[in-house]
Length: 132
View 1 (cartoon, helix red, strand yellow):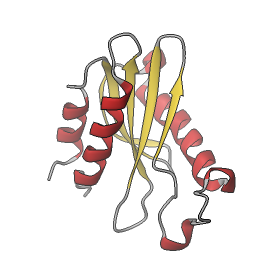
View 2 (tube, rainbow, N blue to C red; view 1 turned 120 degrees about the vertical axis):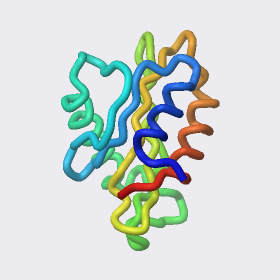
View 3 (cartoon, rainbow, N blue to C red; view 1 turned 135 degrees about the vertical axis):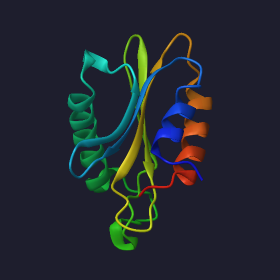
View 4 (cartoon, rainbow, N blue to C red; view 1 turned 90 degrees about the horizontal axis):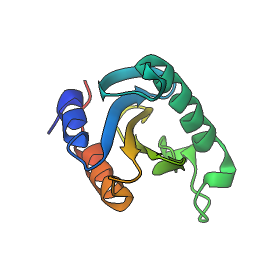
């Protein structure tokens, strides 16, 4: 079972990976980073992506149609994808036994990256990630 550093190094093996981070979305702090960061500041990026993650997780508009919500202690959101002209930002929520307040953030080049592959691999990494 990989820890944060191993998980981030694995994320950087994905085609088109520019940078990756494990972020606590309640505090906005990066628990680990690797590679480049949009704007050159990993901590600012962590805080900004945490804000996006909080908004998506807390609004009922994004909950599944079956009405499931936070009642099980986990966010109903699996991942978020933000795209721009040259890249994708994929935020994959990590389910944990405690408070599920962590996500993986992958910054992926649009031309050389494969969004479908990145989503599959990030989901696998999130399931295998050991925190602590």
